[in-house]
Amino acid sequence: MQMFFIAVRVQDPRIQNEGSWNSYVDYKIFLHTNSKAFTAKTSCVRRRYSEFVWLKKKLQKNAGLVPVPDLPGKSLFSFSNDDFLERRRKGLQCFLDKVVHMTVCLSDSQLHLFLQTQLPVGHILDCVQGHTPYTVTDAILTYASSNRGYAQAQEEEPAKERSLTVSYESMERYTQDLEPCVCALYLVILALAPLLK
Image (tube, rainbow, N blue to C red; front, top):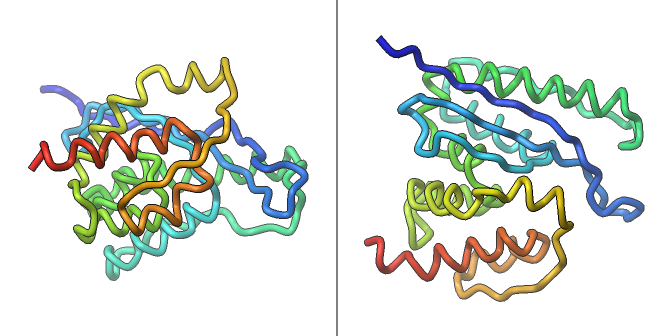
């Protein structure tokens, strides 16, 4: 009998827009599993704390009376405080470790899109509600196939900023700050959506 595993790692905190009024820290989330609950067996995304807060609220709403684990608290400390960043990373790790082992959370498509695509949270909601031209599974599989080698390439060469205009109306407000390869993914999904129906 095969044993199922779900390994999730929160690592590599990075300050984005450093020195700017809108700077923030995001974390790399690496997932590796053989669980049938997940569409892709490996994934690597970057998420910021406010996106974890959004996820917890959505998971709790869908879990009803089943309590969803807590996130590490917000802090007024500077992002340059390494101890703070490490405590937060550990807290986010603990949160995800517990969430991915809760059946009620594993059945939530928002969790899968959060962990296995780089979709912004507003677009995750659009996808789950059927307001996108593709399904949750399509989004995950497209991201997984386009993400092969992305982590290594990201380390070797920093992404250059580009601006893209996308025909899907609700996406326009989300694509402005995304890395170019993620924006390209959206274009691929939009182009393939009619063929996938």
